[in-house]
Image (cartoon, rainbow, N blue to C red; front, side, top):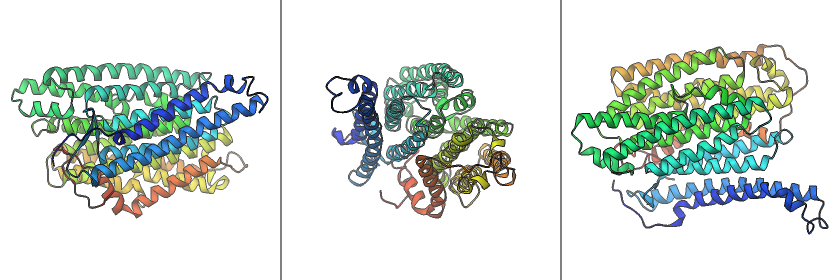
Length: 531
């Protein structure tokens, strides 16, 4: 496949422009609601309270519609680059790459954001200034869109920092609650250190290659024969991975996760566990697959990531066993899930027959499956907490009698997180497992075995929740009535978690088609499905 620069067309960045307008308009409307509503010219027409409520609802709907339109435009951009410019990569100002790979993550994150906004609606009474949260979620989604398309180090760093800054505010949003404020501070401190390390790694790469473009870095390294310089490149890559590992909850950069997930508002916890993680993996795969995909370099970072994957999934699962708070359990679970996805990243760096045909599509499919099963689980957590005010696992005792549909949906999500059929987690985890097996190296085979063992370990704490829901005595007799937004989220996620396996072929073909790019790591377009 060839790579070419297409003439600048604003259509390629239309999703980002829509999100920028929606996010800023939402913030402006939320910030100016009181002065506008109480303006003397508005007072004769409508009461201040009604006018203020109208402005708030308008701010919310601006963000909701903006995210939905941006997701549709991202899908259109992905289709157009595939159908109208086959074999050509579409660049915008040299710093952004528009292809089905980036479109895949953008559409997935847009769907996740809409579901999180629906979950946030359940916090109508307890969340101050909810429209501002909608606006911040929209701006966070904008940052993720930039991350998914970034093909240049400066754009990549700015996008990561943009997402980080918005995330710090979201985690500490409940400023009057000590847990939320503490979580925001810890998240900020860890994020600042990891960002500094990542920036140092990027500066080393620029100093060694004289280019900030990912493809330019790959071009310079292709002619590099000095072994010492290659080792420095690997060191620089590790520093960059430290910053990206912070985003995906990779050990040893995961220390912020339990406290941040437990202290943050639950919808924000759900958003960070899915959208932020998806963005981190999009950038990680793009960075390694474009800048460091050379045969003389890829096996080294693949081995490093394989080791980190084993540490990540083992640490996450063993720590989750001892948790009694369900949000904290899901936090450690998300660390383990990151380890599973890293298995695909490691396998993608190993040359072998059929390895990459399983690795990259497996990563994309797992991100898609994880989106629905994890968001669904957090939606159930919100529903139970809204009714009973509990987040402890024993508080789920007898849930099957009080809310059978919630218990059934939670069971589906937890079984999918384990990787048990007939759920999406099974087929996604199977693809990653086969990718590691087909790599046929001792380290990758060990990684596959560790992945299987960790899946068995995870069954203990996931099934413990199922046991409580069906075999435990109810902690209360009152039936649980969930908010419409939660019902919608749980229903969509439960159906999608099953549908991805039942309709596995088109989903897998979609994942494989999204692998379209001109780099050595991704030049394995094997799907026949058309966007």
